[in-house]
Length: 276
Ligand SMILES: [Zn+2]
Image 1 (cartoon, rainbow, N blue to C red):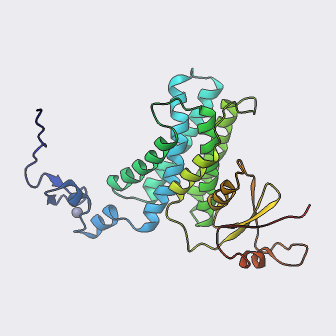
Image 2 (cartoon, protein in one colour):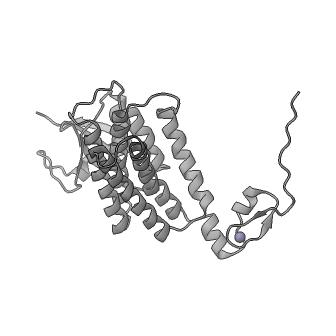
Image 3 (cartoon, rainbow, N blue to C red):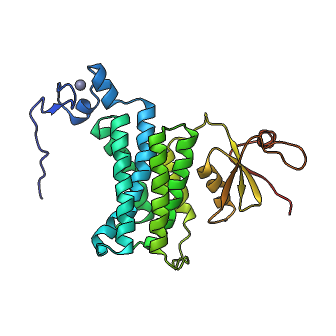
């Protein structure tokens, strides 16, 4: 029988990345809270963590789509340039996150690993993934992430970065599917909902519900677009076109969107249809 040995590290082999205090286990060093700076880095406030999850997650997904093309496509080709534009934006977004939302490596690594687990569940690395399907899912998730970041009141720098990421990912998707007609069978919606949930994170229960019009017909109450997609998925509606309706907008019967939202028994929910 083959014997395995765990690598023995002398006591005190692990150090807090900030204050350098020594610990017996790596996990303990990563959770060091000896000084105020350790606390801030190792156990960052929710806002820092959730911003990395959302904005960092969107940037990681842009990278996931663009990165393989830089190796596979000749420099100067349309696809290569579109992919490089996406990469430039993801790099700027990460730089902005590092400046504004500092935290320890292990915090970011854990968030990234969780997102990549979701990605691997949709596109197992051993199987061929159609780049059109990958692009279709990721462009929608980035759109959801930008909407969520705006709703959370993220700063201008991040919002501008996300807007640029969305535009450039759309342009890259258009370069991947030049005929505007995708030639893959898979429905993108399950992947979109899964990854939207992953980057948006624990349900933002505190957020006020909004009213959305789907495909110009269905009225859905939800907290963000990912919520709306989840509802429409239950009805088997793929690729929903989602428009937000502002709370003050009036309907023919005189009710405002806000009043209609209040009639929803639960959130998210499909609450009605527009009459033709
Ligand atoms: Zn420390």
